[in-house]
Image (cartoon, rainbow, N blue to C red):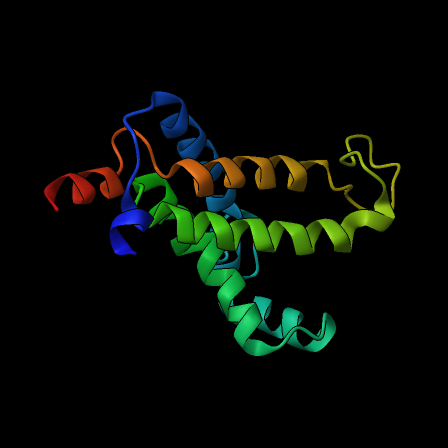
Length: 147
């Protein structure tokens, strides 16, 4: 099972998708974990998720860890399929939560909030990574070649 989890090809396209997903999600995780990029940091994010959004603490913690550490591990290509799956789940939930705002992102500030188009793109990329693995220059590939 571990071999299948790490197995990937030498595809540069998968590498590009892996880097794109990881680098797009990482700043959101850094906002939640460290308060970077105008975020509120771990304590305030946990408080928001648990008290205002009524998300169980374990799930809130998993969101923060997946978006920060998990996206960094996606960039490195280490256990890519696991982290891509967790990112896809988070994006599916976020898509549902944003569905009341319509499809499009709030480019002009005219909507009540953001739409869900961004989430669908992230889900699509994550699905490719779940199927194909980390691709070229991934830790997964190096580990699978050694076995």
